[in-house]
Length: 251
Ligand code: PGA
Image (cartoon, rainbow, N blue to C red; front, side):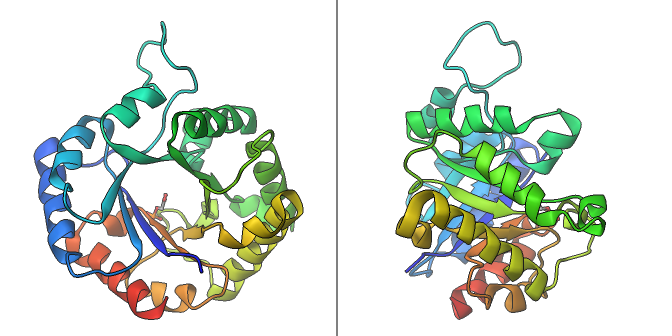
């Protein structure tokens, strides 16, 4: 049985004070939760304080990115060991905004995934097609490439989480239908089965892209959707707790 995950990706939002307030509200709102995983991904500057805030709860911490070297002269970068040190369990890798604005390639994603695993961080590896790619009918080949190159050389998949985030659905309010999302999720699980055999059945595949408490209900009923990676709607306690509640009811 796969345990569901809801991750809130705060992106470049929230001061330290705002982050602590939001994390406290999520902690309080999830205190009676008996199953599932709630993950918060604040900006780097708030990781330490959010880490303290969520102590004693079932919430875990994620970073939104990391570099693939252990240390060295890489001005402005953050090493995986630093994230472990501060209490991160997860790290988001290859988010489409990293790919788009910072030109991350599949090979960078691959280096980061391997490095994260080697230090004991669990990567949430993001994949997904653009609007143009979907129009051209090449969604499957794009996702296939991203998965295969991103996981190249990764021998054990158990600690990896995949997030399918169609780029056209991120921050646009244009959510994928549950059928569209399930189709790609099942396709991804098929690729993982080819690569890793039956352990692919234990891998969590999250949907991301304009998820709200109003649309998550249908998505989460799909067999291969094991949770959500949430951007905009994770910035307010009500919106995020509403999503968590819906998922907890249905999975
Ligand atoms: P969104 O972002 O929920 O605001 O569409 C999702 C994401 O980028 O992870």
